[in-house]
Amino acid sequence: MKTILIPEPGKVEIRESELPVPKEGEALLKVLYGGICGSDLGTYRGTFAYAGYPRVPGHEFSAQIVQVGENDRGLKEGMIVTCNPYFNCQSCYSCQRGFLNCCESNETMGAQRDGAFSEYITMPVERIYDGKGLNPKQLALIEPFCISYHGVARADIKEGDKVLVIGAGTIGVLAAIAAKAKGGEVYIADVAEEKLQYACQTFGLAGTIKNKGPKEFMEKVMSITGNHHGFDVCIEAVGLPSTFQNCIDAAAFGGRVVLIGVGKTNLDFNFTLIQKKELHILGSRNALKKDFLELIDLVKSGKVDLEKIVMNPASKDCAKRSEYSLEEAAAFEEFARFGGSKLKVVIHFADPD
Image (cartoon, rainbow, N blue to C red; front, side):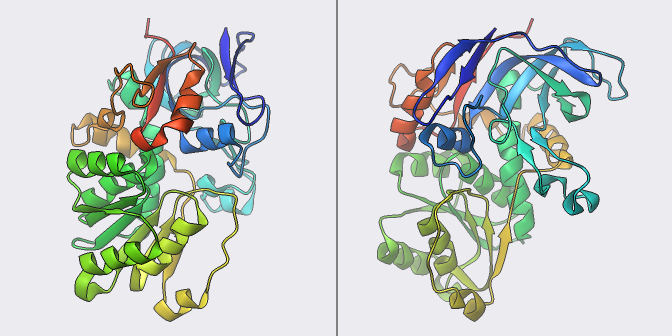
């Protein structure tokens, strides 16, 4: 079978590998769609904090069950499913308290352990969730929605809160969608004008901020927020020191800042500003089973059209194209080069039987 491998930063290979054999309590899955996440892109670029090499990327995916034994979860061969890719130890202090998403020894597929970008994979049955009739492309987009949804839930957004999401990539846009669903008046900031406009117009956001630099950024923040003197909630979805600083600066006194983005660069800043503003700084990592189940139901209800996250799937222009086949390793290179005009890139591995 074919497997996508990142042997070292800047390289992607399609290799032949052996068909995995499921252990007791596991199912054999045929991968249908996979989404290239910002962390996968960071692994390719060599900028992702948790990456090791060589690495099979991928933790956003849908699959069809090929083989599964007797189980108490209603899983049957032929079902179209998605999976929870965060492996936890279940014994550390975090796991003991139910914080499985921030397990001290967490291993996420595609990061600390090999991911899903192969024609076939095995998964423990407790990590497999029924897709409830969603199509394979939609199901592959559930996991990134979970990341955003979990972070937004931590912000405790209330009706009428002014919310700024910094980062118009997949996680940022999905965070904006989730924040709007919570009743927030949502704005989104980025350096990429095309993605800003697409997100704002497609998902009905309140407005955008083109992040040209600290001075212009704060002028726009104050123009938007007026007497609020900043945003009630700022959500960082990039993972850069500068965008975290943007959040600290843009947050109102007594505001909440949620950090979803992951980076590996230090920030030197005046931390007294956090004390002065009495900011609530919240980290957000991974997601929980309930996030997956709730969002599968939400998308099934028709209230969110997740497929709109994939811009220009049928385009032949490498600067805009957002859907690739398994054999096209160029997906990573082109996403890295033209990320400003692409929101979510997906790989079509196979159709269901």
